[in-house]
Image 1 (cartoon, rainbow, N blue to C red):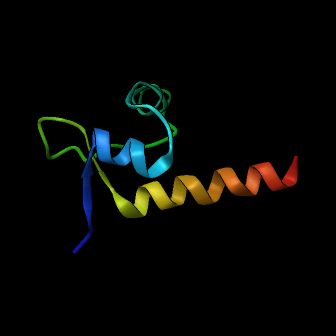
Image 2 (cartoon, rainbow, N blue to C red; image 1 turned 30 degrees about the vertical axis):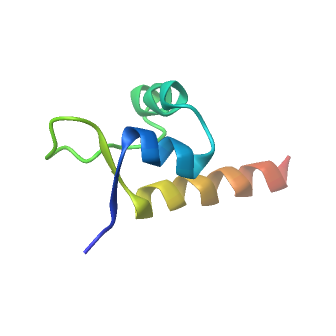
Length: 60
């Protein structure tokens, strides 16, 4: 079973503010789980985001 985090904990895991995470969700960079009333994020999705951003930073 996937670990699920709320907006505040997900932002803390990524080292960004809740506003930044909200903005990324609106831009389509990260996806919230649709079955919840408030935004919830799977740890796997957040790790995918961090892996793709670190790859992008290494290429720069």
